[in-house]
Structures are given as C-alpha cells and as structure tokens.
Length: 263
Image (cartoon, rainbow, N blue to C red):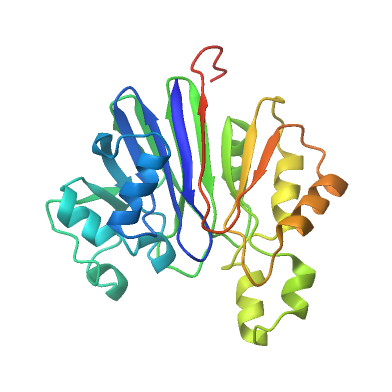
C-alpha cells in the first residue's frame, strides 16, 4: 500500500509526501520543520522515514522550510541542477553543501522504490519544475505554479493515478478583485498560475481511466472560492475521476494499492 498526503497547499505553505515500504519522499517545504513533522505524523506517516526532499522552486511558500530541514535532519534536498548560491533566495536557505543534491529535468532520480522525474514549468521563479513520481507501478503528478500547459504535462497526466493539480484562481474573481493591474497580469500570464478553467480543461483533455484522483491545489484565498470551483467542475468537467478540492492550509491523506497497477 502506498500512502500519500497533501500536507498543505496555498499561500500559507505547500508540501506533499508519498510513502512506501519504509521510505518517504517530501515535495516542497513551505512550512517550518516543526509543522512538517507534525503534519507528516498526522497523515499517518513516520517522519523518520523521509529520505529526500524535492523542491519545485524558490518561492517561500514552497521552500521556506528547506534550510532548517536540511540542517536539522541531514536528509538530502534536491534542487534543479542550475540553482546555486548565485540566487539570493537559495543562498538565504543556507543549505549545507553535503545536503544539497541536484536533479536534471527529464532525468529520473532513483531512491529505493521511487523514480522522481522533474520537468519544466513556466513560472516567475528560476528553474521552476513539476514532478512525475513512479512507485511500484503507480504514478503521481505534481503540477502547480505554471502559467502555461505544455505537451509533456499532458503526457504525464495521462500516465498518473493521482494528480496534485493547481487551480489557483477564478478568472472573474481575479479581474474584479483588489489586486493591482500588474499583479493580475502576472497571475494570469504565461509565468503565473493555472486558473480553474485551465485545470478543468487539462483534465478534460487527458485520456484516463475512471480510477484517477485529482487534488485541486494552491487555491488563492483572494481570487478563488471552493464553491465556485465546485460549480465549475459540475458544469464543465467531463473527466470521470474522483476529485478533492483542497482548502488553503488543510491536510488530505489517502492510500492507493499497488495491486492492479496500470503502468
């Protein structure tokens, strides 16, 4: 049995975990080490089994806890191989050199039963990525913080059993909302975020069996609303999998059997 959890998503912090056979992998560390420990334990996963942390990008809501995590646990923290001390946000994390590990996009990192492949996304942070994770014939997609959807993302989506998919904003709420015009353009631009309609369109495009499960993540507190996203799904989602809309900062955990895998 594979156990996994959204430890939290949204402006308050983002982190995800997948665990199998005594090995757990964390993705993003937008919380303090104390909160990461507590949330992991509450999800039913032993924090001592965490053997790696992979970071999508350097924005604080995804990486603020990575430095303390690395210094206190001595667990390797993986960043895109082009990220180093030339970036002030990375330098400020103070990752010890013996804990700083690298991955190259489109090249799998193997950790016990896990295969983790980073892939390019389009966001206003240097060398931003998403992740495609395979373990014992099951697959997970972490796709947030991108302003555009690219062919490789659809390919990974079709191959995944569980998707952590961004639905950051409702277009009408963003346009009517309090943000200044330049910030609105940033959010909706090619280096911004996915809207509700982007996420629904992505799911409707991929060809997938009905047993797939999507977690709509990274909802904006200001520019989105769970009920609006729910209505949008009811009115426009033709994809037939299960769905969970993640409340900002809340946890969601589940399991998936390795029996009957389809990879």
